Image 1 (tube, rainbow, N blue to C red):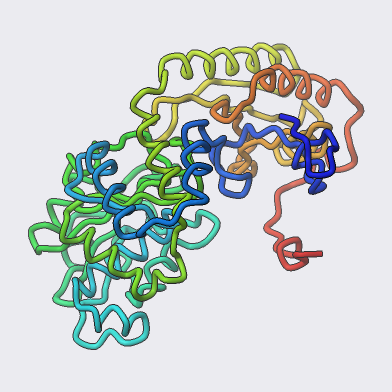
Image 2: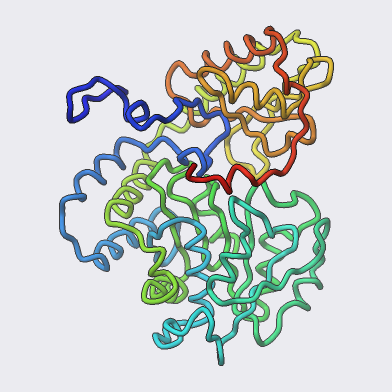
Length: 400
């Protein structure tokens, strides 16, 4: 949307900042700005921005909203899901001992300080999840192997130093051979170990607590379409202990009043959202893209469900050498076009990528279809057959 800047120029903020006008078919990715914030959240953020509030009271109001929407006993808003994990782990270690909270992360004497997690759940979402545990001062205790976790792997990992267990729900985790949440909770609860669930990108706001989790952490800025934030919900004693970490390690993770109010509004908007209508629009985009790729040599396309059972589908695009592209090469060519189309490319080494329709502005589905046809009918670029490589040099050049 165009707006008038202070000098009266009719430009978008991206144009004024020199940012590419990308089309996001990658999904709710933090690296791309997470989501399109719903109008209700934008309005709440703008309204509270100029107001003084007592932050603990604002968080009490947030607790009421979070508890109602999630079925938890209490809840609060924090900076993001990663900070929520650190706070929940730290709270399981310290309880409400204020001196212990100030001693973290380096001084854990007298505290339980180990966290059990299935090896297949130790993922990287832009940073390694075990770092969120270590920031609290805790030690990660992996259970099982990358391909299978047995009940005894978790049972034997628990000892008198175990503060909590962490269970991760994400498409990044190993999707087979792991213990279910119910099995994981049963083993941990038999030893009085609380279970913390990282459910950052999940639609289901009530199911994980109902299935046995003690604390669940959601992203406020992914499918909820709120501002960048994390939502912590669950048992009141554990939520209270986690919230008190704002007096310690979580001071560096503090959240502003705008994000708290915006996330509350996004939660309430979620109740009223036309989920069926959104699903219908997403299905139309997927069918449009699939049809656009029909009959192109070396290209296949299949609509597949979300791997963690969220109510959404994606288009999996298979790229064979007959197309003149590798999957990595085609993804790069789309990203280099005008406008750039950013696909979900985390599995390109397996010869495919995904198109996610959940973050489209009106008219963008048609542009994506046109861009794919144009790239696949044009002369192949120099790196059309490039193979994916793990290269960190780009990150090291920032901010140049």
